[in-house]
Amino acid sequence: MGEIAPSLGIHVTVLAETLDDAAVATCDEVVLGSPKDPLALERLARLVEVVTFDHELVDLAHLRTLEDSGVVVRPSAHALSFAVDKAHQRQAFRDAQIPVPRFLVVSSAHDQRIEPFLEELTGPPVLKAARGGYDGRGVLFPSTRDETLSLISEMTTSGQVVIEERLALHGEVAQLIARSVDGQMSIYPLVTTVQANGMCIEVDFPALATNELNERAHELGEQIASLIGAVGVLAVEFFIAPEGLVVNEVALRPHNSGHWTIEGTRTSQFANHLLCVCGEEPGDVTTLASCAVMVNVVGSEQPGSFVDAQAVEGAYVHDYGKSWRPDRKLGHVTVLGDNRESAHVRAWESAIAYGTRTREV
Ligand code: ADP
Image (cartoon, rainbow, N blue to C red; front, side):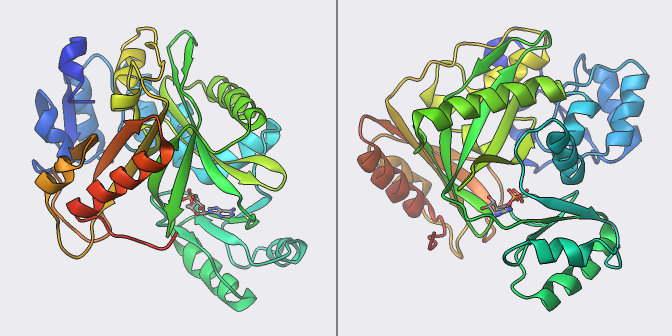
């Protein structure tokens, strides 16, 4: 967002915990402090016209206090609660008849509903910390009943746990929407996301999905955006399950599944997020190539070469300026083209030259 803001005439002040936070490199002003510290939030709020977010590790109560004192927070604490709290998201979506996996929310391993719920499932569940997880952290895949129960016991010591049916996935797709304050929406095309160890490693446009699935994802995305009152970018991650599309999670910020839009669409997700939270209408999201492949650079043991990564024909290489650490998302590469296979080969060639971890998918 910091890279595109100057061309939109937007001045960015970042609340960062340290000066080497990646966002500091591109912003106009910095407030040092934690997003969970109410005083730091107040210092930030005094300097800006609108507060927005690039992650959801935030304290909703502090954000509500800011809102109550007249600070403009977009998306609102109400909208953010669907991204911050998986238990709330699952319950609210089920109530609105939006498809989600079968689930049970518990606060204690002694909850009497756990055994009958596990009995209903055909295999072991997935366990998710209701709050605080990202990139697969806080999501566990036990293999036996004993392991399931002991993990529930451990996880409930730090908050609510969502026990969820493990679906047989045919794939995963993501729908990005930019929504203005008055509800105008620009709908990006659906993309396929490829995961390894709970972390997204690749995004492909167009999605490997039928026309019906594309339409259903657009429809559900619009329904969700209106239901939660999203402002800015909303990303909805879906599972493709035997029963059709099932919502996995939502994010109310520029999202990993939309990094390809920097080069691949007329208005990127970053520009659209800023436009919408600043009260403008979302821009045109027409695509600029018939396909795009984005590969995340996830740190392997040793860094590779940025120069070699850039030397791959057609590769747009982005370095987030973070210190190199194995398993950390450090950058990404996008290749646009007419041919999915050759874009895929070149994007991986570039990411591997950069030092990405290669994994079995
Ligand atoms: P995070 O919030 O850390 O991104 P997710 O909830 O998206 O975690 O889960 C990470 C990955 O784990 C998903 O992308 C998917 O591959 C797998 N997963 C999560 N929930 C389920 C489920 N109910 N059934 C099957 N696979 C799942």
